[in-house]
Image 1: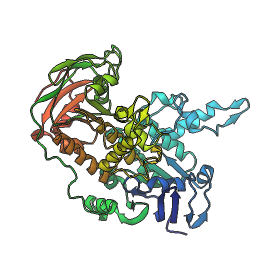
Image 2: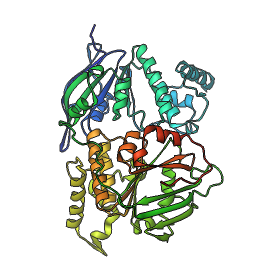
Image 3: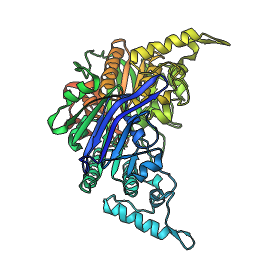
Image 4: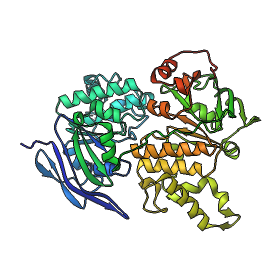
Length: 506
């Protein structure tokens, strides 16, 4: 009997212009949670797609329980007990939980699908893992965290022995993360092996047994989590020590660039922004913190002109302005990198060049004349500034790793030379090396006089990069914290503090 549930040996996979994997090895034991770590573009997703039958490697072998297997498609992977929960959930929103769990393999009765049996079987599985969801509820009515739990139950329902989880906590709150970890531990106690992909180091140390690091498509090392530390893993990932991680050496001025007073979304029912007032200083990084659902992103959407019917007063450099839509905001020098780059940001079928320059067409198009050289120059400037890994400017942006897609997004808005830059979760799904680069760029922008509003769910990011922090709770600002007083305790106190609205300016 093999020591390993899964072995991937000498896996190599190439794409045009890119060697994604070169002789990569990976081993998973039954009953362990084994992290797969690496910078964006290191080859993690490609390796998982090889395991899941989406890609076929040019070289290498896969063994399960010591026996070589051939995985030539998704069904082959499933037949071998392999299930993958991708970062983007693939449930059908307007179908029930039970229908999603048994999609394509519904139990049959005398008159078609046996819905009673399907619902009962689904409920039994949900209860087995204490998910706290009714099987006859529609997926659209569940929180993202509950949908994540349903995905896990669906994967296990295939008698899965190898479960891959790709960034499963990227959109859920801390309480829900703990519930997810409990389910993972339950699964490993039943002999399931879990491959865990996350950029959050704290999670690796909390829930994983071993960690394998990839860099530039090659295998670097495998470590016992209990015998390593964050700095060692970072150096393995990036191939060097990170001397500076959080870079903040610029002192903001007291000049008020943006003043927002009594911002609300204008909705009488289900309002997410009720009463938000704040000031942004020149050259400042102003953090916005709060629990999931506090209304931070929705507030910025109001300011950027994306919420029809929103109310409140906005002053830019001392002058009252009327922002009816995003075009108005951009003309005033306000730029916004949205939270969800896939749904709200990128043109996925277009090139890096197209995505990099779409907001600055006026710089190289004059009536019917297109200055291609200038467009190429702008694109390359922000590829270089953001250290974006792409084989060429013509690469389709969807073929880049998540972190490199984020760099293209930020670079696009930097190209507009904004006075105010709103960054909504700027480093979500981004590796530690890329995070350090983004922090350095933010610091440099503030030195040039750009004022930044940063929404982040990562407290270390908020604490170390912000000059001041506004905290929100259920659509209201509960307070503002000066840099010297910013701490996890001070933020969480305000993040759970009910208020009647308004703000406390520091």
